[in-house]
Length: 314
Ligand SMILES: [Zn+2]
Picture (tube, rainbow, N blue to C red):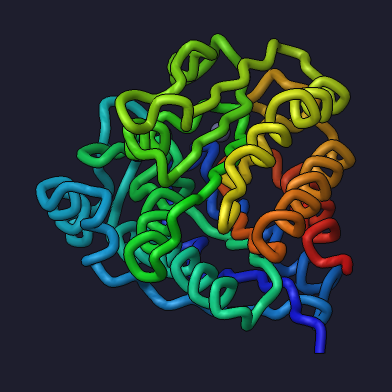
């Protein structure tokens, strides 16, 4: 029997509720999840995740930082960084559940129980640093899942493709000197968080295993697809990853309130298809995609739908 695409998600991801008006609002899950259920039904495998064990969170984050987040379980609402990352009662558990979703995706994709996976989770993760929250992100979900794949399954070459409109500075930092993880990011530049220059290519043993592709304000599907053909796909062909992670933010959509890039859902579908082809060529189609940003719930839903369509079609 053909393996299915899994969507790993839970209504519990709406329990983390930053103050009203914050872009990472609970309806990013609560409005999108039921519509996806209607659209895809049993054509996808729906999996309710379990929280990650703290050991895996500690493989990326410092004990002091994890303790700081844990302490927010008994407070009404606090800022975890200097600006915009909030935590309150349920946030620690919700962030652990997001990591748990990604770890389960790794287990099930590597042991060939599913074809590929999309983790519909909150809060996002790619700005989170080993010792700090940042940019709505509490734990670096994709970073922890990559380390889990290395340590638990002996994977030696992981590709992380980050197409969120913002540079994935946390993920880049974690693996900057590590050739076992090739981090490729396409992002608006210059823009928040200010990092992600094209000249930042990794360091030490990791030199050549970070690629930053700077996109200008107003860039379209055509320019992203061109960057895939000229930069991303040749790099993947050379690296021959054993598994591909996507840090799938959908805030580069033209209707997103945070980004100034003009992608459409068709662009996300094409990029997904290109990564799927690359994964089929190098790693038996192993792709784990994890939601990062995306703050207009309508374009978020449409983009995820296109992404899932491309992931799940044979
Ligand atoms: Zn973003």
